[in-house]
Length: 186
Image (cartoon, rainbow, N blue to C red; front, side, top):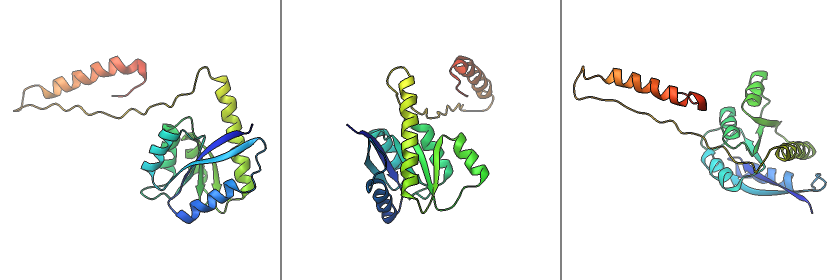
């Protein structure tokens, strides 16, 4: 039985998404593997919701999404959903600095439009194989790491000179002490 590679397509333009689907589903060149498109998203919020719900193996992500796009968003998605590999698809080549940021941000591969079908299938197959090998080496079932949301604590007083600064500073020091073993910042 063929292994299924679950793919989430993130692109704002409907025609471009249809083109990606055609490239992925026609004349597959991945022996022993089947590609299944589990979802499509036009914007970042949709990508986040669908990635959390569907746990795709690969997120095929355009740098031009509906609400916001670009390399930073792709890196944020890659870091938030560590079980999914992000492949960036761009209309123009990335500079050396952008490629470095992408690699450090967790992006697995980068393709420039127009996309060659065989190259796309080759990249997907290689990334899927690497992820499969990595999962086999890890103990237990892989789990997505939840992203902590920052919290703000405000101190206020009815009048000046009641000790807001003193309490705020001491609270920050105490919190930093208690969380330093968890690698969290205050």
